[in-house]
Image (cartoon, rainbow, N blue to C red; front, side, top):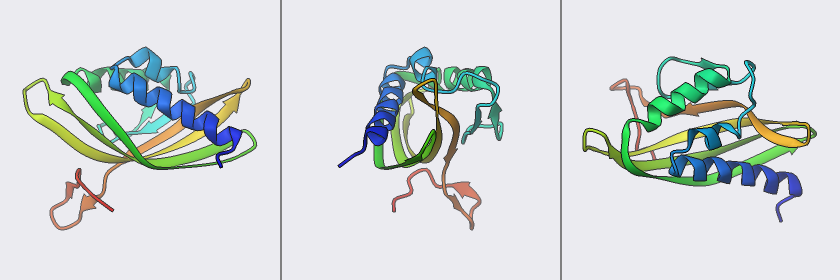
Length: 145
């Protein structure tokens, strides 16, 4: 049975997922720590985004590449917490149509660090990654367990 902390963080991730599907950057960013301390490692260059404003711009640029609806599926979500810190990880599949007409269908690994501040859980750090095929040096966007 999920603990209250797990339900709270699961609700946080549902909020991010729903805002992602709606392409609502402001609602997405409402779930992140609004400070320069926020650090995100995304699969989209550059190698890191430091600060809330930088990550908001990343989301704006990323969502602008899609034409029409986006589907996001979160699988194998695991959440752990102790006190005011926690972490979670999942696999997230994103599908949609790109502005150029090509189909997007990729899976990423997402690890989040949560911090509870003033009674509210927010994402304080995020790491998004994909496996790399060491032979070709290319990202594996369709990886399955």
